[in-house]
Image 1 (tube, rainbow, N blue to C red):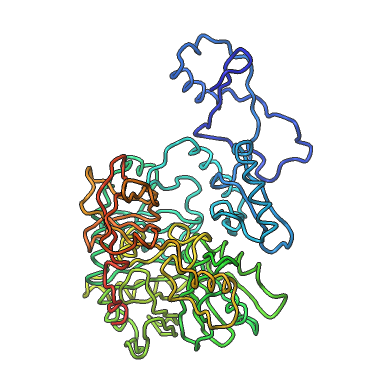
Image 2: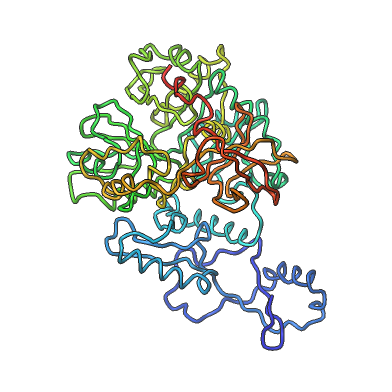
Length: 561
């Protein structure tokens, strides 16, 4: 609300916005408004009167009702469009247009001239939206909800409520029977955690009841975490992005993109990053070589479009085919000290450490189904990602759950994954890793192979390595539990000697180590284990210290059992 020519101008963001012209704005709709809708505006008017009661006596002079261009996450679309050479975008600015226009222009100008944006614009990059958003009805619902939340506080455990059920897993029915509480990521319904004995449901508006404190499911997540550490957990990772890269030019393309050496024997899993010319991390993923000219790129649920776009921007004119097989393959994760015994009960194949070592992959028969088994982990325990055609996913899930009952195996969700990976120091792209950080800063120098054939970012990494890093990603822990059953969520300010020196990139609770854990970039002088720090949470500074990078199984022995 503001003063306007002797009166008041009142506006706002209604909680039930109306989508308009989702199939395209008519070409002749210029310098026009929509019909007045007092019923839609009434919610905003009532709020204004509550705040300024005298408005109830004022005369309503005029209602302006016009369309606002909103993207599905309310953020602008910037940058070159993958697959359309020379086509650049600066769209979807909507209500930020006047305030951010200068910055948007400056970023695009630098990007066009230098080939890279001057800052991390991951959250604005046009590559972030994948094929699911080609469904205009879905995109419109996501945009409506984003609009609703523009000035509405969102809490750490909130989930999207609208446009749900767009991409159910082929295991959806089994997960619901096990009591899954589903969250949403990139259209996928994914289990956040399980409530045994309850019917599965979608998390939504009920999450707001917990605000900033620990939610009721905190102990359930802890039980799943401990099941993985002590026995084994069964996960649905179907939402992982999966790309098949094949053809005579496949190896050369991936070698050009990856900082690690992809030229390994078939049956090898390679953890690597794709870098920009400045050495910044554009992607963090695994590549599995299945044949001389066939590779599987696996990435996070929310990063498929970004990674696929990066690959397409650097593809040669021929010799390489890239297929998105995400929707064709279910992925089941099995991890924990009992994982090998469980898998051995479900297959006649040899799954010994000698036959299927860490970071290897091969085909196995499981429940009469051919399955691609990749021995890799994001939770820090022995186990496999098991890839199978969607229609056979339930058979594999059932077989593993049945074989695992004597060992205490139970389904687990993504909330447990986050706690497990924090204890192991595993990074998450978009928070811990972005295009503004390089592998040496991020503690991923072990992936870099400077001696291999040229790759994007190699020259920059050579300069960075020679000069030394100015900061590095460190693990820190609080020395005592936060009061009021609260937690770290990421974004909290970190202090050294009374001044802010960074912010948490990730934060959470480690159920095995029994501590609040955070990741933060620190100057090397402050990166020694034991260095005292403070973390500001909810307006209060709490004592913290730099911890070892890996809090659980630092030698990685459990991965190689």
